[in-house]
Image (cartoon, rainbow, N blue to C red; front, side):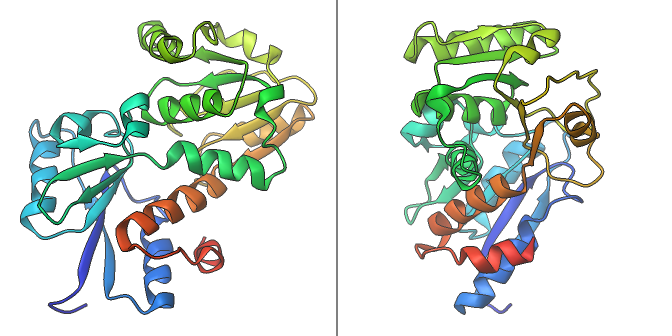
Length: 268
């Protein structure tokens, strides 16, 4: 790093688990870019920390930042504009500081998720019923991407039924009658179950033989959905691929260059 280094950050709390800094920094090095990707820990215990952190991106000359739990929706009110994709989903995982200083919000979560499904030969979502666990920022992005790809039915479970209903209503505005709210035991009716809840959320999950279980979490110490899925004879997919593909899309927004996917994959 030197006085000409372009800075990019990761905003969230906590960040100790994140593989994004090593993945992005390896990619910058591979392309010879004078960029540095740094963790920006924003403590939710301080009332104004998020707003101050967002403004600091502009004040400190950052090119942008990725956004993770718990700020993918809360950050929207501090941004100047949203891409159509993030506007629909009401979720942001990538912030770009434009040349004129405006803060633009985008979301690569949904496209990254779809790219990983396709990598696992599961891109035929038009033939799948989906149970979605969670109703936060990641769930919004995933749900809209599934419906955009032609998924006929997204059934939402969340601990807060109000949040689940709110997501259902938002989805049904654009995709009428294709989203609904379910109880936890109904997830066994779906072809594909997608977990977007934080890794510290404990659920009593019972799967059905042959289901595809996709956990957007990738941390090794996440609650063991994998064990439950595999013991039931399901196909289990970790969110490490979603991290890779969504990160590659963000990399291209930050740098204007094609992401070195193989380098980023090896970093994980």
